[in-house]
Length: 517
Image (tube, rainbow, N blue to C red; front, side, top):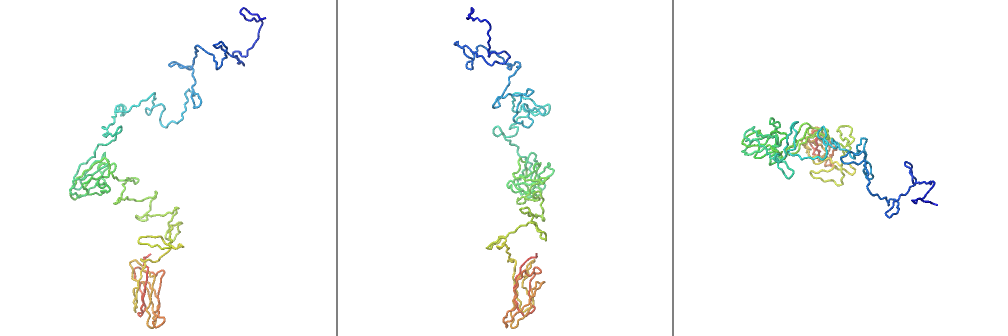
């Protein structure tokens, strides 16, 4: 039977042993089981604690973070690790052994003397820049130039007035000099050796004006100096009315006109000088100008000195060829260039006219085969002609190379001219000879016929034949000489003669006219 005490608690005598698998001892392995914790809700019911039924807490909770400090106070003794995104995951920032933040520079620094985080103050030091830097626009007040170690000189702001210029538009200005050309002293030319001069310092050109021409007859030369007027050199010029015709360095007779002088860069003085005087007068004044003539001399170098290019009187550029691709030209004779021919494969085509080894290559000369012979007029040309087998057509004679003549001997033994003498240097070579004899009455008469050029002679035996016989024909000479019988000397006549004075013969000759060689 159970008994209870005054407070209604069950009286238990003896001992009761029990174990709880959810209970463990401090600093030992955690229990393998757990006891569910519950809370009493607002209705007085017991409820288990879970993620959807958390333990309600009321009142104030105090906590501290040793890595958090107050502004203006001492640095905390602890810190919170800082991370950053690599684009996908959170990554911690790193420092080196000296506690400096590691920074990866993805691009190389530009070359030069740039210093990151600094401004170069001078060639020997750098000055750190902190915060924002304000750059002040230079003005006449704050812009200075260091003159020496003890003073500075103010630079006045540029304006149209102090630049001697005209301001055009807004924000920009074009410099336009208001300085006029410098005029020399006018001189009236009325004698030889007179000069009119002008200094060119600060100017780049020169013009000459002639006026008040009183029938001036003489020669004026334009000259320039590069040494202040000690030495003078003749130069050229152009009339403003004809910029394509130079007056010439040898001088000219001026008229009322203006002329632009050609002056070298660096010339210090210019002048006009009367080199020859006949009569009359003319006024002359020179101007040092701010611009050069529209036409200037073109120069080149010979490797050492500056040379002005020259032309002939027609304005064509003179050309003195001395090299081709750096190799000196060879002259066959004075003024005639020796020309060599090289084939497509760079083979040498040169050959000699004497007996020698032929070149490995030669220039081919072609001929054309035409079934219809070409018909040319004066001044026309045509290719060499050949037959269908490639053999070249050759016509040995042409109208300007042949001449024909005739002669008769009547009962005489005296030589007669069968071919007259030709012009000086012309050889008349007999290419054809025809001789007939008149028949005798009853008996054929024998005779000899002699052909001669005065040095060489040629003899044939002939007969006249007789009318009383049948046939009555005598000897007929009909010769074609190939090659022709050569004349011994030029410009001599050919003659024929018989050895008897009792026959009559008729002769016709054709000669080829040639020159020696």
